[in-house]
Image 1 (cartoon, helix red, strand yellow):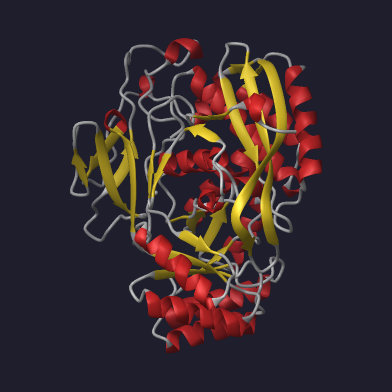
Image 2 (image 1 turned 120 degrees about the vertical axis):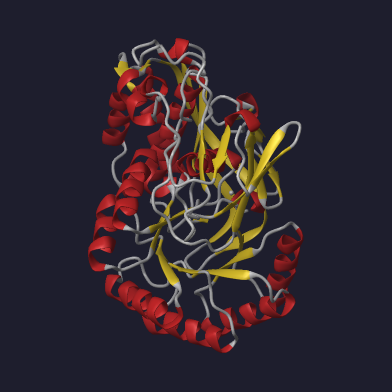
Length: 466
């Protein structure tokens, strides 16, 4: 075990305090995860059920690429046996015979589904969740359970957020059942071929949320089959509320250890400024991410930045300031924010496909793209991540209003790839109930992952109401 400046060891855990995307000027602090190989002499042709812990890289693991300076520390925990932290610009040398990444698994693991089911996943919220384009009074998602013939069960969740996801719950239920029926009748196919069939059945943004849920469940089941975990402080969201309510929420989350507050804005320019002033007065040391959810016109977005500058506030990030299809306006705000105040602008609703990201790259329309599995699916997310990293865009990972089932999968993805500058996986904190058992643990701004197989969480399937 080698622990760099940002890590320390106790009896059970290594706790890592990591700067988000931090290759500093002195070239220090790269983080990646390694699983110890139990037998490096075995080849990749070994049957998946016999592989278990022999792989050097975690399921989604990749060595980090070039990255940007941090905006604040991340803090999360992983089991001591799975962690490697080193102050070096060089990744560790590992035996190629013991590396088994996700792409190789797509080609070699044969999937045979025993059972595939879906049910409504309805969870009450602590309070209504309001953004510029919609209001959510309760979570009405879709849970997915897939059992392979080897007995391993994978879990997925299709989040539903009106005006953001294309599906409503009845549509998502119908399409999820269609996909589950197909999987039950599907012949022996590689994981890659099965996911391809799912992509054909549930194409594009129209069914992206359902596709993501099915992909999560399949990948979770496969990860459990080979004995691997899937392998962040986070910012926390404050919905659109009154200045007094916003200040109270800010105080609540500040006490839990959150240092960056994500504020939902975009419905009323004057009210948004009043909310920012109230939070700033209560907690002057907090950093801000603004998320307009398409709510502003370009000139309004620019005015917000100017007003904040007068208050002495520079946001860490300005997310989706204008309508998703206002490409010219997005580029205009991006260039103004960066050149005038050094503020990065993120595309969220404008990033719904690989084609969207290519357009953003070509026109230099945003500095950051927000990856949400419900917008593009798991495989679509991996494609976008590759393009964004190659093009020099920073990455953010977020979600809809989801339980720890979907958030846990996204968290594993973020931890395994290690390429996200902004991590926004907090919406389970908005729920008044937690129907998910086991999986990662939440301790304020710390997410604690274990080395359980897959993502390690599940639902009491029989207890979910229809």
